[in-house]
Image 1 (cartoon, rainbow over the protein chains, first blue to last red):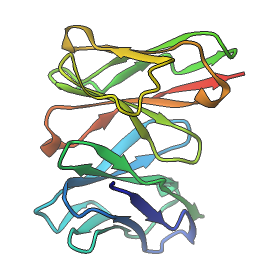
Image 2: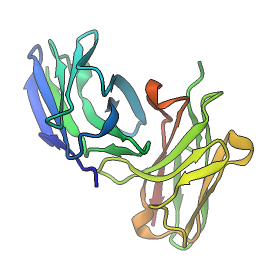
Image 3: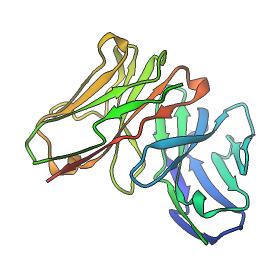
Image 4: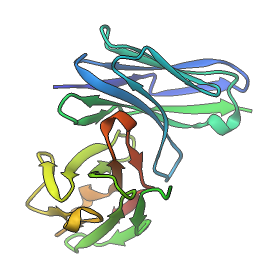
Length: 111
Length: 113
């Protein structure tokens, strides 16, 4: 059974710092992995989608990497801003099209 | 393109009452998902539709939850009767093809008192 773990559960960093969020999954037979952002009381906003054949994806200040063999993905945020404060969720799409989420990392950027 | 539409945004009901949520996916998206997100947890899949057929409803509490997707477009999720532990955000998502990822709606926050 696929399990997705996100560490840390919460993180506070000063504005301007670069930071890394981690996501691990137990079954490497995935189709893709997607990172989402969730603001309080809101739905999920897609940030980056990485196919199983890809190693990384970039969008602006965000870079997501995928190491399928070790069951890990990281989301790198460069030059963090207060507006980056949110919960970040990673979701794994397994071969049977089931999407399994981690519990998320609550990020707080200190002005 | 228009996003995934959900209504209502908020709902407060008493336990044992019934409630229904509505979702309209992105036009052309064949796959539709309903997720339940309890505070502090990641979303949990309740049911997955492919067009108007059910692909996976293994985690749907069928004694009280039901969902339908008529004509393969919009969908409704119903809870009857509601319990206190049903308090959560109910998220709808749709996808054209898994290669393109998934788009989520804003969710419906349900509070059962």
